Image (cartoon, rainbow, N blue to C red; front, side, top):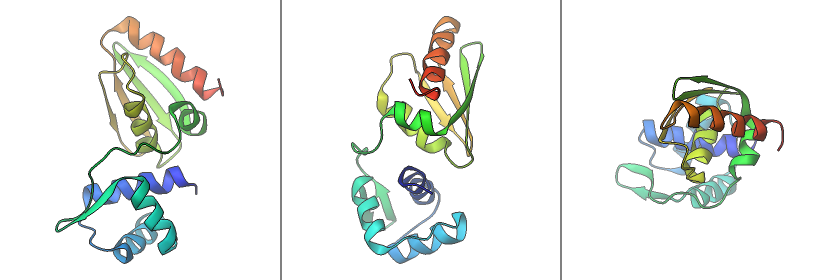
Length: 146
C-alpha cells in the first residue's frame, strides 16, 4: 500500500460517506480497504488533499497541488488502454483507477474532455477518434516508463 493508493481511498470514502473525525476515517479505511494508518499520517493526508472539516464531514475544497504527476501514476498503475471511437478505456491495478483519473484531470491535457473512474477502470472521453488514438499512445508510453 502506498500514499497515492491510500489518498485515493480517502477521497473515495469522503465522497460516499459522512466522515466527521480522523478516528472515523481511520476505522473506515481499515474496514473498507484494510488500510491501517496512524493519526499523524491521516493528518498529513488530509492537509495534502486539501480536505476541510465541515458540519457534513470532511470535504475536498481545493485540488491537491502535491502528489505524483501523471507520468509517475500511470507508470505505477496503468495496465492497459483500449480505444473505442473517441473513448479510451484504461485498466489499472485494483483500487487505483481514482488515483490515475485524478492525475489525468490535474494534468489538464487538451486531448481529454473528461474522465469517469471506477475501481480498476477509467473511461476517458476524447473530442474525436484521431485524438483518442494519439492519447492512447501517449498513455501507453507512460505505462512503459517513458
